[in-house]
Length: 592
Ligand code: ADP
Image (cartoon, rainbow, N blue to C red; front, top):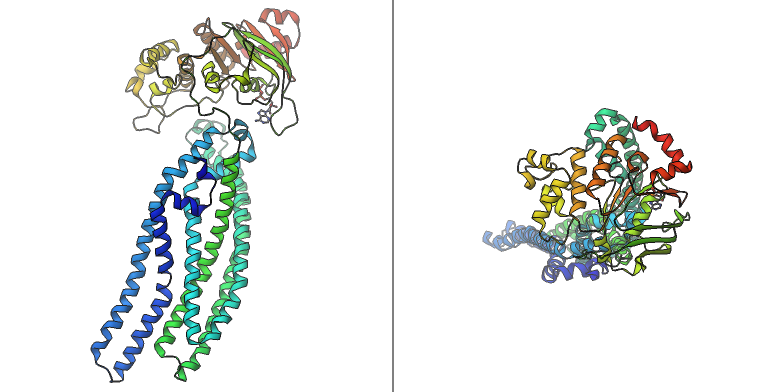
């Protein structure tokens, strides 16, 4: 699989579809002589024969063969063009089945830190956006370059065979143009990359402005205009950047082709003399004029295009290799074990952690023990490190100091599949899958064992029975509006779907990371009370910065400045009159 990400575009295209790629190259290169030399010869033949016939020394019928030859040359050009496009499409299809899966597989296996890091995320987005098109375009560019080379060389040979020195003059002026094109191509790609940053931001703002999901808030808060203004600023910045590079590029390359055109004109003027002198036939003169102008045109447009795309392909391959080299989380694509492990306690022992590439210890000596069957609440201000603890627990960041033990076993030595089966997490931004309700819940248990009865159970427990009866096709109804027949459900209902998913999961430890943060404090504490009841006897960790919801927990851990500052049941913490009491008092108003 990885091999697909490590080779250049030519090798990739040939690996994907060897026969089509070979035919593509062959036909493209051979056909390069059609619009130049072949057409020149056919024109010369036709014009010269016609001239002789008009002079009365040859019968009229003699024009048939040159005419047929001329028409065939023209026809061949279009036919070959169509076949070449067909081959290209075929290579593209094969790449969809080979390269694309390789990119997706690597993407899924990536270490979590690359996903959270802005710079590597940009590289990942660049590579995964459309790898097939990038390879096809790069491969096409190399072939186009070869085609141009063959075309130019054949025209030069034709001219050399007639008036040798003219060919050398043209050649001498083409070399600097060549060099300029390579430089411009590189600059353009760089500008594209810079502009991408802006584009990503504008896409996001764009989505805020027109997306379905935010329609209520947009209307309510009326932020449309503000976002539109920001969108315009972002867009402008990206556009000006690209425009500047484009303008320079355009002047360099088109200015270059202007020079070539002038030189060709000069050559034509010079060729008049040999025609008058009888050294060059009128037909051959016309043929060469056509070929040279055709060539100049091609050089002006296609040379810069192909060189630009060749250097783009080079950059893309570099990106692709860096992407292939990004570290993977061992077992990232492993399925959770069918049977979760047993345990009696999870222990953090002096855990210190800073995010890769940063200097601040987000956790700075965290120690605690979670016992089986108890309900815990992690509280603390936003940014106190509560979510970070869950990221460490679920194995997303193995680079912590200290120890995390599950029954004395260091977390890092536990197989990823076992860890995945051990925790079920409902995140703040839990996913809303636009698939049938049943499948939305079934995702909670990848083992898929006896799920029908268990799904019914989870539906009942999560209080979703009313929702199911409201939906047109019950559990089979797709949620959201993406699939045909899909139905929207309310935010509270989505929350219950996420809870049902967690209930279905066989994981012995359930973590809720502020999935209720979008609710008002009172509703949040109501959901939490329900969750408490549902999960009785199970080990749960409920994370919130709002203390009203967490009163019922067996034990509350207060996170502050990278450590667990206080811990104990609600009443005990209140008696202590410490940080917890202070926070609780300051939030009291939320619940009145
Ligand atoms: P909480 O869940 O308590 O609100 P978090 O655990 O999400 O807090 O964050 C703790 C600190 O770590 C914050 O200062 C946050 O900015 C920082 N942080 C979170 N994720 C990352 C990341 N991927 N890279 C760097 N810093 C991060």
